[in-house]
Image (cartoon, rainbow, N blue to C red):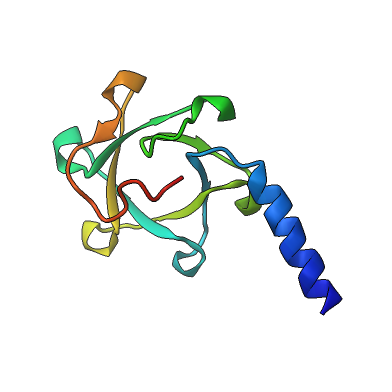
Length: 113
């Protein structure tokens, strides 16, 4: 019982350091919160995402992402899928921060931070 308490207290402590928009890329689908398909064009995507270079740049917006090295640092774990029909979310990675936005309504809107 003490091991479980230590484990959950460590998870709580480390999760409090995570910034909104922190993402971890899971190796397997069962490890991920969201399955993501990367669109070739912006009009095909549910969300246009800008990837921040530093963690503090990923604010409370769903479309500003920072990729973490470890799963405990992340708000959301994602897994890239090969086909669009496998995805919960279709993403387009844009070049500039001002281009990042939700392109259409999605059940994940507002839940990724």
